[in-house]
Image 1 (tube, rainbow, N blue to C red):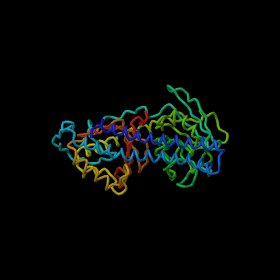
Image 2 (cartoon, rainbow, N blue to C red; image 1 turned 135 degrees about the vertical axis):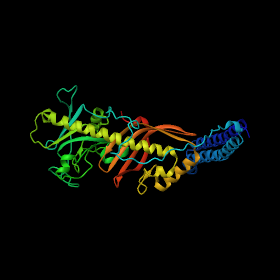
Image 3 (cartoon, rainbow, N blue to C red; image 1 turned 90 degrees about the vertical axis):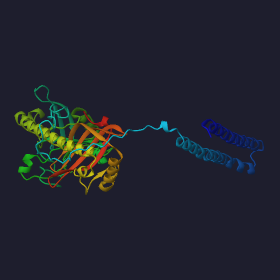
Image 4 (cartoon, helix red, strand yellow; image 1 turned 180 degrees about the horizontal axis):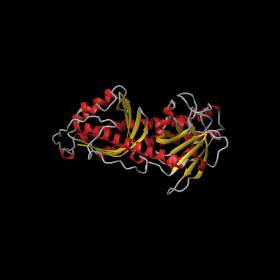
Length: 414
């Protein structure tokens, strides 16, 4: 049966059921008129009460019968047409001989590489040197300051905040206190990476810093974050919390925010916020942070370059060396299922090529890291570019991929 003949058959079927429904509706309408003429006798009242639901039921049943008669025929015809299409309609994909690649190993941060292997890292727009934050635990407020062209710091916004529910300086994990000192934003988490209680985004601070470690202070997970929808900041387990509207406004200034100084103080009678900044000390600490971040960026760029080579080699043993095979999770799969899918991919394609761009370490601690980048994946039959997020964990002194996910490349913050 051709498409035109099938369409005519459908028209006839729908026309038939349409007329049947029209006839039933006209009959029901005439019965109503007769009932009115006879002053709604009890029997006719009962008929009127059930006529409308019955008509609707008939309409639904007729439509279902029409679809039942038409849809199988449609899919059967389309399947036959696709099965019998000319062979020339199918695009043939040339298959080139597979290329052999040298074995790839997983270099770790701190190892030396060839001078021409990895381009030098140049601090880009993701590193902030224009803004600073001063959070006062005593007054529950936060000032956003701006400095342009090495001029004086000037307050431009003020926000109310919540701090840890217990007073005092943070000393250990779980004490529900907010730290005090000079910190820097090391990463930004998006709503898709957070439980709802943290609001639309969160900025990660580098607590504990070197001074904290020397003093024996520990713990982790100190963020600047928002709240659950329709709620407002009260108290936290140690973080700095803003209402969601203020946090969104703050993010419009900070963007990715990496490198932003966050000075946390506890002053019941604060001075001018700008006077709190010790410019020489802050500048020294900021240069140190920029240097560390640049090295970290380069180290993970080297790691991803080797991972890229292992993937392109289509050698599952080389590829597997980069993964936490006991705890990996990606795209709904645990490691064994992920590995089997990669084996099938390697067997089906003659060539796989990756091009990784705009690598950014968006979250970092001594034992965990998150790296985001733009990835172009090209194989025999596929060419796609999107954002990629890789979460890593340090096990036995070696960085391993613990999780992989993709996201629209437009979300890769500039």
